[in-house]
Image 1 (cartoon, helix red, strand yellow):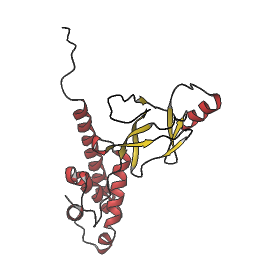
Image 2 (cartoon, rainbow, N blue to C red):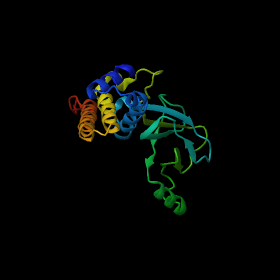
Image 3 (tube, rainbow, N blue to C red):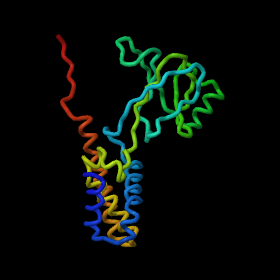
Image 4 (tube, rainbow, N blue to C red):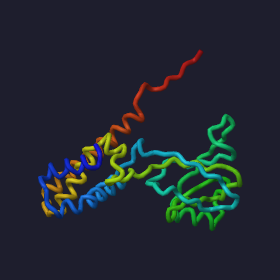
Length: 210
């Protein structure tokens, strides 16, 4: 479903044609998307980016659509090559990283944390390598110009429930808002569970001795 279809469906469910509701529809969509981005982390949101390392550089800027990290690794050469030797960087909290810097703790290990929309490293990486980040992207925002995204096409019920909850909250129909909010929560949980099942489904690997 596209933007207009989602909005029309939500207003129909809520039976609202108020001028004030129509004037604030873009706000309701924005709030629904903020809720989705706070609570949802599924395969469709994952994305992979690379950046070249600079000797001694401690901070690297995160992508603008960043919404949570999955994996960070370092490759001393190029990526996706037969001779690639990527190693994982281990996450620590900002406080732990400061302690490591002060005590020169585990200097052979590579760690990262996230501070102010930046990837902070310990220890700094050598020049000419590649940092690979696999992260969750925010759901692309809908508007009258950008009519649809993967979420609106594949999971319109989540959008409709979220927009309807915001409409009912706006008109102070709190019982109905709670029902729509619960429906959105349930739909998000179903999507998350389905994603986990799809990721880990299939036959178990078996060892064979020839």
